[in-house]
Length: 111
Image (spheres, rainbow, N blue to C red):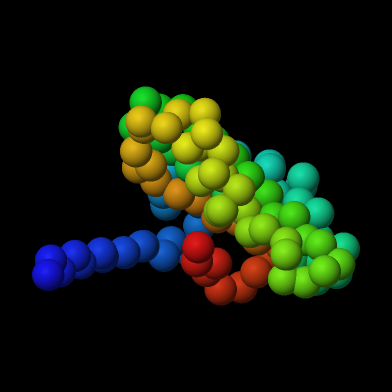
């Protein structure tokens, strides 16, 4: 038997301006794509932007369906698109932006 460990970590910042410049750009992409979310049931709009090792940015937004839970989250859409378009490239960073019922979320949104 082989044991595989997977570790995930993230940093929480109080403002986009505290982020490194390349991550600020990624965050702005997530904010922009969030507007394309289809969330008529929850009003919880999410945008995700991935930075690939080749410096390409790939985005996705959540897409709800009346037949819950068959909707898809923004991160999943972005990851699937990245793998379809750039199957050999690794994801180096992920930014997620959320907006709920006309308000920015007060707590971090994790993938």
